Image (cartoon, rainbow, N blue to C red; front, side):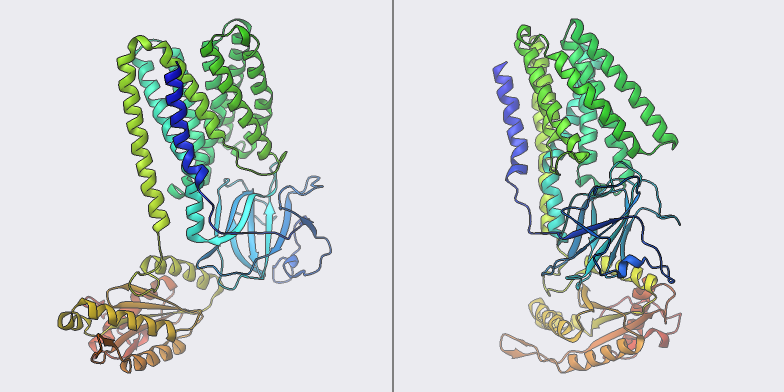
Length: 590
């Protein structure tokens, strides 16, 4: 049995190592929180009056805005803090979780909302995801107000709240999720293998219990990883899957322990897992029927588990001295898992300060203990088990390689065009969605300028692509100088650029385009000491709401205007209101 134990412990160390050595990216945790119970009254315009309340009357300091004292039935909580000043490339506000729904206001304006609020300011449970909230460039030093509603046992933010760059947050999520995702994949593979052997071999009860426990552990671990939200952004789906796995764990534990124990301990554990099976069926049925929310099924289960888990542990250890080595191994691993589950439960209910409890490692240790004992019992089929182990290691390596690739892609992910240093098309697409939503919501103008270098193909054909790249870099530098800080210039591809001008009217956009065309004519570009011939630029302008009912249509309208500028002789700017509706879209650059 010792070689098997050494192999399993070595595998455990390999799985844990990436999570232990990873260092968190730079971030700014929010401090200086204040809170007050109740909901803010509305002024004549329907704006919560507490947004304009700069006094300290009624506000109380708190280290972290979770479950302030004296709740006494309150379902609404307001919290506020000053956002830190600093330099970020793409700043976002990261919230680990919210109990239960919330509205975020920055400097009195609605910034973000999670969940739906009715006229009374109430709402239903929408899940427990993590939140990545985009911040404007000038957020530093402004007041962040958060309106929270919760009819759950907890209220407020949960876990952590910080400001950091978007890419740093994605890297942080993947580093934190690495170990859990690998363990989840391992547990899922173990469940499939154990279930397959249970169908075709002997000892169906024990192998079936291994399959059930491993499947429940895999579902719960992966559903609770933050990386799952990057895969599918459906919080209620993941919370339902996590609840199903969590509620099934004691059933799988009981079946496993009952197989290895005898006498009174076995009878007690059988009664316990059957009680949890009843709760699993009842909670699943009630939540699926809509009679209760998924969130409301957790506190009763935690209370039940807080009683049954120590009961299972104590009765399992009643005859510890008389147990053989394999049974002691199971009891010790079960004790480690039980302690971690109880610690995680204490954190979840605020009994201890927030910290990340490695529950997945406890589940893995218990799974590995059961596997080790099963391998010991099946030593007469060593050849079959050896092939199983090889296949298992192969699958773990394959999934580890896939996760390595995913982490590398996320860490190397960039919104910047590598040649010009401008933002790229991916960034533009996301920014366009954000700005069109804001323009729709606030009713402010939004202008878009499509730009294309004239006869750029001739430059590449005559002088080569190296000279063409030099031209693109020089033009990109001019574009950065020409447009104001609030404007965003992106390279869409080739010699095509786009500028997004939030708040700019048609007249302002036309003026900027005309000035740019003049500056491009005068632009002197040198390559290898030789001055290149002058270049020209054509532009197409479109503005919301002057030219489009929806700001998302601006790109197509500006492209048609650009085509018209090319058709009229290039080196000019054309605005959409001068283009006929039947003008064909641009199909040829140059």
